[in-house]
Image (cartoon, rainbow over all chains, first blue to last red; front, side):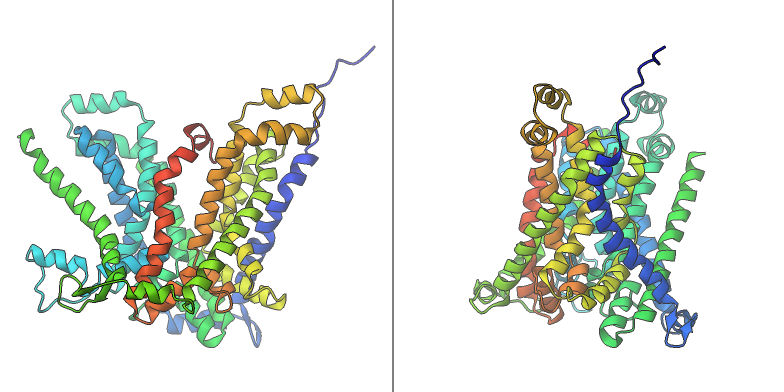
Length: 281
Length: 267
C-alpha cells in the first residue's frame, strides 16, 4: 500500500549557506573581539588576576560614578521628552501645532554624533547662542557668563540626539493604540496629561523601554561626545578607555573598563525592564 | 480659557525650535565667520577664507573626503553582497531559528562597541589590516549589517511570491528568477538599505579612530582633530560637509522606504 504523499521536505541547507557569510562577519569581527575584551580584562603580566580591576577602583571610581550619573540623567530626560512629544502628537487638539511638532522633532535623528558634538560646542560655548538666548530674556549676565562645556554638555548632546529616536518608536506605538479607551477617558473628564500618564503610557511602556535600552547602549559607546564636549575631569568611561590605549597602550585596564561598561549597560537594562514590568502590572 | 492655550503652545514650540535649530544655526555662523570674539553676539567679519583653506589643493579635506567616500562606497558594496543573499534566505527560504538569526545581527549594536574596536585594532595590527581602508571597511560593515540585513529581509518579504513562482514554472532557474523578477521589485528597499549603510559609514567615528587613524584620514577624524586644535571654523565646515547628506536623506527617506517595507523591518 503506498504511503500517503508526504509534503516534500525542503532542506534548510541553501538558506543557511546564503546567511552564513553575513553571520560569520558578526562572529569573527564582533563576537570574538568582544570575548577577547572580556578575557583581556583579567590578563596581567603575572597571569590571570583581578589587578586591572583593582587599578580601576583606585583610579576611575569617580569616572564610573560620573558615567552612571550622566547616562542615568540622560535616559530619564529622554524618557520624559519623548513621552511628552509623542503624547502631544497623539493627543494634541490643534492640527497645525501637531504637524509643526512632527516636522520639528525629527531633525537631530540623522545628525551624526560627531557633528552633534561640534554643533553643541558652538551652541554651549561662552559666546554661544544658548548664552545669547538666556541673556536676551535676562537669565544670564554677559559679564559673568561662563560656558556649559562639562557634564551638562554631554547630557544635552545625548538628549538632543536620542530623543527623536525614542520619540519615533513611542509615537509609532501610540498610533496603533485603541482610540476608544483614550476617547472614553477624555470624555469622562480626565485631563490630557492624566490620560497620557494613566492610559497611554502603560500601553507603550514596552516600546519605550526598548528605545531607552538601545539608547543606553549607544550612549555607552559614544566616544566623540565626551571627548569633544567635556574637557575637564571627571569624564566618562569611554574617554578613559581611549586614554588608556592612546597614552599607555594599556589593554588590560582598558578591557577591564570595557567590562565595567558592559556590566553597567546590563544593569541599566535590567533596571529599566523591571521598572517597565512594574508599570504594566 | 481654551482660547489662551496658544500662548503656552507657542512658547513650547518656540523653545523646542530654538533648542533644535539654535545649535545648527550657531554652527552655520561659525562656518562663515572670519572673526568672532566674545562677547559679540555675532561674528564681526564674514567670509570664505576658511573654506579656501579647507579645500586648498594641499588641504587635508580632499584626502579625507576621498577616503571617506571610498570607505563608504566599499562598505555599501560589501554590505549588499552579504545582505542580499542573507535577506533573501531569511525572507523566502526554510531556515531554522529565523528569529535568532535576525537577532544576532543586532549584537554589534547591542553591546558597547568601544572596547570591541580597541581589540579589533589590536587583532588587525597582527594581520597588517590596521590603518588600511580594508580594515575600516570591515569594521563599518559589521556595524551596519543589522540595518542592511533587516531592511533587505523586509524588502524581499514585501515582494509577492507569485512572480518568481511563475518564472520558475516557465522554466527559469532559481538564480534567473531571482535576478529578473524578485531583485528588481526589492530594489527600492535595497537602495534605502544602501543609503543607511552609506551614511552610517560616512559618520562613523569610534571604529575609524582606532582602526583607521592616523594612516587613513577621514572626515570625522579631520573634524575631531580640528576641534581638538580649537579651530572652530575648520571643524564647523567639516561638520557641515557631514551634515548635508544626513539631512538630505532625512527629507528623502520616506520616498525610498515605503510603508509596506517599513512595517516588516525586524519581523
